[in-house]
Image 1 (cartoon, helix red, strand yellow):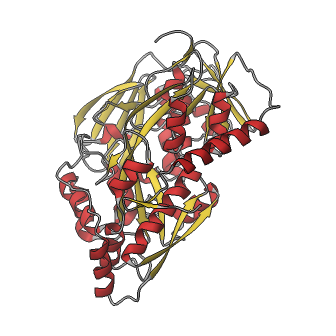
Image 2 (cartoon, rainbow, N blue to C red):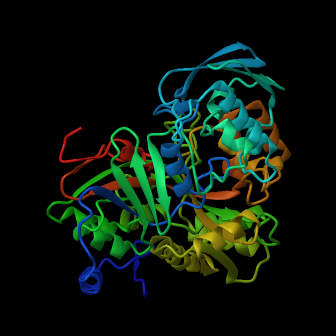
Image 3 (cartoon, helix red, strand yellow):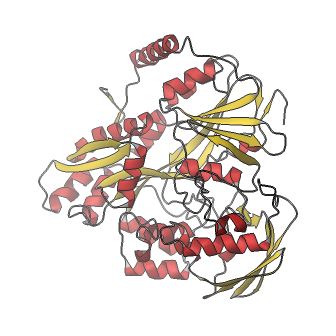
Length: 496
């Protein structure tokens, strides 16, 4: 694809580009002309990426996290400002070391018919702590003991005081009797959520517990094909992962309802701080200054997108509204590289997935960085290979999005020296004694300011969210974090 510079962004805004989208749609319609239409009783959801696992103890990718929220229930959930609220249980803090949770009546029937008790809660968290390779295990290392004095009560004893401990307990609860049998939850989930798994072969076939409504999730990686399936009635629902041209196209189509909302998912450019070039903070700042975020948001992203400064947005209770987005200054970026004694152009490699929108954004970053004397090379890999490379530090730069983050503990998980994978998500291998101390004190304004200065990430934007519904479907507006909770209440032809 040849991109024409526009306002500092490599993006073609000419009618010819729109004609090319129309040509692609027309050709794909011909290819799909003989595909069977129907599935009147099912609600079909075309997704860009299938989940990697349905075991909540191992889920780290967005699709897995989103579907697991529907298959399992947790003790705690969050309100719009990211504060913990009761889900399965209410809680009482007895002293800095002891917190008890009392289970309510709702959501306690597992999909295999058994009743969720305090023993299941204890077994779930004990199993998590026992798994050496579980990415979330380190978040619960402060637990000294767990007891279930009766079927409705769990008491946690902590090693050190933690005022925010209830907010950590968002893990989906598993049945203790299946944990004991080493059941494969990754492919055969058994939770107590509003949806249950029926079958997972090429598609993910689910059933809503309340009314047995069938819901099918189908992986369709090509965004144009996803749009065509919606227009032909071969799928009923799209959410996220479309370029803005296709979102605008859908808005003009009869019988298709599109809703957009401001987003909170944090997109960023990650650095490998062990790399000989990128361990230099001047080089990292030069890369950051070479990106025109405002132009990308204006021309390439959907409505509701906005510049980002930290993982948690400023409206979050632990957000930092004092942080300012990094400016676009390619001339200053070039000076920083020259002052570092580097020959230009500086050659760097960015790894990303094969998703078309992610590749497009990578290509735009490549075009922008040329003005700063940076030769950005792009390596696109299938999702599994790409994410495995990221977790194992096999990159110079990578691009990802933090999805559904609710608590400020994400900063410890992503940046503390002790959180290098597999015990955490410090994928860039940042080690900073001052930041570690701030994270231990839970001084979030100072910690986020320190992260902003160190630049282990380049904050890019909070991605807007959209939802596209086929004829007769009713579903609430998309959540700011893009979760799929609306599948629990989506209906045909009935207002909610």
